[in-house]
Image (cartoon, rainbow, N blue to C red):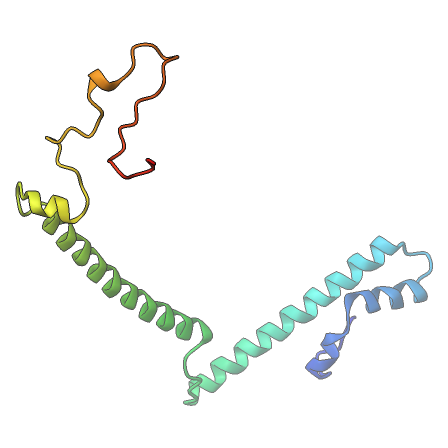
Amino acid sequence: MYLNMKESSTDASLSVVQRQAWIMKNNPEMSRAEAYDQARREFYQVRYRQDVERRVAKEEALAVGAYFGKSYLDIGMELEDKQWEEYKAFSFQKAALQEQTRQRSYTGGDDEEADDEFGVPNPDENVLAPLEDVPKNPQAAPVNNAPKGFGQQ
């Protein structure tokens, strides 16, 4: 057997590969794969027995009044719940702010000064060059529609 259960749990830290090497050295007729499978099975048996012993010891301790506190899972769930509640509060605030912004953007009607303030052109203004200024012949010289003093000499 890989380990006697009376040995300390630190002895269980021996690797499966070390046990495999010992099996191959003492049983030369056994192949490498067979030795590894045997060492692995022995390791799983020892690990199973240790887990059973730990569970029994915990149950016995609980039966006589021991308290172990929160498990790592409980602590993690509490932290996750706290983060979730913070995110929920943040997202509700963000959604309310976006809704207020959306509602504000539709108030005000046809205020031309507001359009000018933000640089949005009035749709009634003609921002294109008049058609008569566009040359009919594409080979002709381009017409300068820039304001006076802008790029002219």
